[in-house]
Image (cartoon, rainbow, N blue to C red):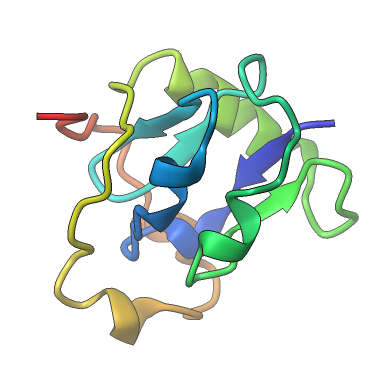
Length: 113
């Protein structure tokens, strides 16, 4: 089992989770984060830290294999992030909006400074 970041992170991109990760397995895209499934140690400490409730185990029945693939693919392309940043200004307004995959950007974020 591993944890994956799902669509509610898109355009919210809260980074509270990255500071508690003991193995630094979060990677930053332009408008969301992903977890590298090969690096995740399944500890789950990131789950309660996510204000958007966007982190779930890959065994969750609501999570299809597409989210595991997306996390793996973009964790291999995007920069690592280990420090908390401010979320986008409209993050709270977009938290919980359904079907946010339509807003997904494949562009990388900036990673750590």
